[in-house]
Length: 342
Image 1 (cartoon, one colour):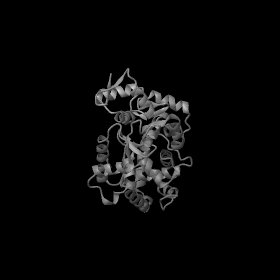
Image 2 (tube, helix red, strand yellow):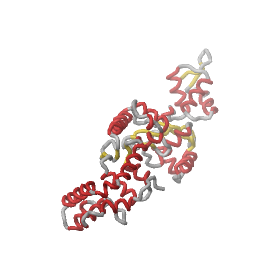
Image 3 (cartoon, one colour):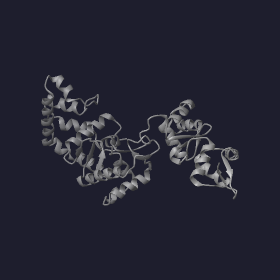
Image 4 (cartoon, one colour):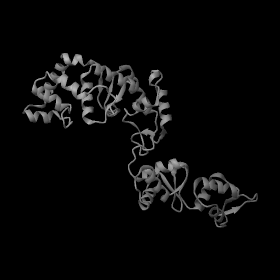
């Protein structure tokens, strides 16, 4: 379903009909306005006519200027106004990869719309750079504001941050004090966020730096991290594999999952086949070592306190901890009945 009221192919035919054959052919191929809907390079068109790339570029520029001066173009101004209104309603600045599919899913139609954006004086193209995807704007002030706010937002993030979408949008609006009321909605904010190349979201809809493995999920261990983080407590590697299959639709074998978790420092083996995230404060090691570390750090403790503190760091059965405390080679009770190191 298209969001525009006009028929692009008919409009293009009208506004290019006065061009000479070669000039028209160059425009049709450069913008993919042919039946194949394929945008051709200057090189490819140059080969066809036996002329240089530079000459093709000149022909293209002259043809575009000629269209802008034509009566047919002036007659079709309503379509440019319609596109401008549409872009205003979408936020005034929008990434090309969002704008074209929003208007139509059809590749040929997208090419015609791109052609009008290049022609229309109201539309400003911002080329792709390190920070942003290629984008179009109809309002300079908003565009500048969005660019600045996205850069500030990026600077405010830590490498490990994983932020739920609603919170990210709030953070974003906090960077932008004077954004027009009409744009203060989540849909527009999501569109603005997608202009940034430095910030993106993972398959669970959480936002962070694009370079973070929690965002750019590359394989089983990254998916496992997201699954476990969402789960919030230790999981058996079989559970993790099943959750990856279910959540992301990626069939994951148990053995593969186990191998990936063992190798990655983000995960800690905390029991038989049970894994926790290192960021939860879990540590590797057998029960005895964990108890020793805690007593070294905390001093003498009661049996109950030891069990509670060990459980925070490792995923042992209560009985395992109690059996270990009773080992006189390593632990003893002091006069007040608290356990200390031997």
